[in-house]
Length: 324
Ligand SMILES: [Zn+2]
Image (cartoon, rainbow, N blue to C red; front, side, top):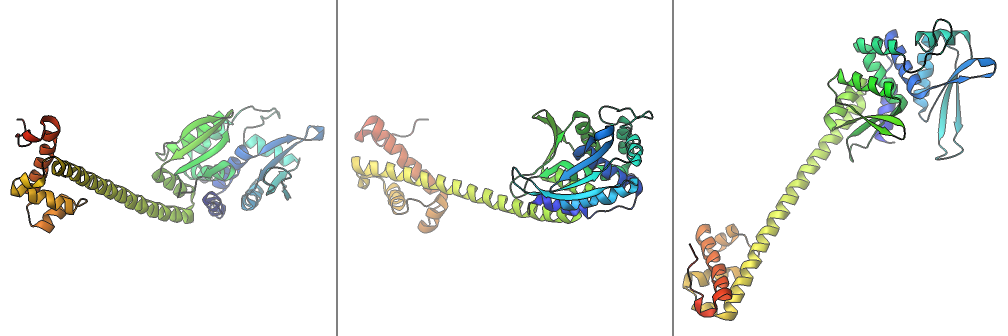
């Protein structure tokens, strides 16, 4: 089961007793996931469909508050993934007009009001308890969430502009910085970052998945830190090994052209030490030789300088001092 599904299972268990919030949650689900159908004889019915059985069961329960007669059905998709889908239908009935008028989708004369009901927008934004319920219903309707192990991305998909704006405004009430992006003529509202997603889960009341999310997040953070440390260590080791081998090349070059025996004794000791331990760091060389790090560093640099002198001026001029 994906993490997004577990969040939905969790949200479906949240059943508030406040009538205002129950209706806000149902309305969110209906506006974002439902359709109005015009049946024969110009009668209206409502229709909602989802792959989450628990969501449909919850909406069935919430719709009771509106005294709507409703039916649940299950069938298997014939195309695509052939998953089971669950539908909630509210067949034509006088009470339906009351419900739609309450949403301002029908006016007092039974005329259609196009677009997102503006009055509803104000009601939900002004009521802190219903804001949470609306976000919960919206997530159940069209929310998705990437696996926390992979990425921190939460989105509400396939919205019209007014619906998207309302979700952004609702989240802004909690200082969540949701953004809108257009995909195939529909708007997507998304939230990025572990911190913001974690807060939204809390706001919607998904406490069990919030705990799971936090624990996955900590595991991931520890793993990332370990990786960073390992990469950093590897980079340092590479640097040490490269420096060591460059010095070995220089020393061999000196040995081939003038011989190590012509070098002053302190340089010869450093050269032989390096040839013996090509991949040691300065600190390691210092430890095996009981020579100071800065003395060793100075001698190895001097050896490289001698190799450059031989290259540039010939074997006789190897003992030139560094310029400056
Ligand atoms: Zn409320």
